[in-house]
Length: 272
Image (cartoon, rainbow, N blue to C red):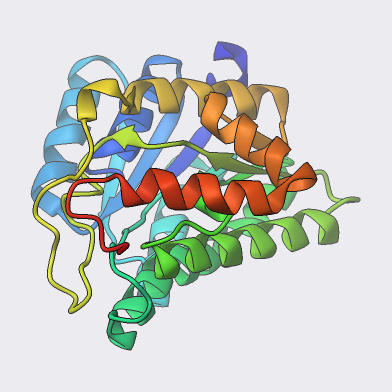
């Protein structure tokens, strides 16, 4: 795994916290040169300083992934600083929690702008460099991108869209040596649920789930690194994800009921 990252140039979006921050720290420890993008410049600067203090190589570029020009600048700055791009990790994401009956359309637009368009913009500008390096394009998706997750319509839709985009890019680059991986963590202990949008677009502010029982962001980062090293197509990280992938193929209606049951038992679930 270390040899797959040592000396490689890794661009990470959503890098100021959660899974993105964990990847930045771990991959720099494994010898990667990391270019970090997120909106929070203060946190990015602190993270880069911490990585450099440990002997790592890191830069940051303040990036709003809903803006195409920001994504282009992130990729091109990384290439200018480090001489190319070997791994593009599209990690920036936002969630939502509301029934489709109740949610305002602006919420779905916002989620799609971050999760889908943020991936599309970064993939577009990273692809020529990845073709040159025969590198890896990675999308941090979700089990919600494998099967519709009730109460998360916009989130599931954006992750399904990401999957379609990345799978098509993979096929188009079959003869160009580009590795494309879709990584699907389950519920992860990070701040994504605190900022999840409610029906009217306001932040949820608290998580309905027990963070202590979830996979850590560092564990997700480690599994993504292993997937890159093995050049996997699909990286499923825990038994729930593997079970979802299996049951969807053979008993999709059962999976509908299981998902409904699970999400209806969340505290303050929007499912009635």
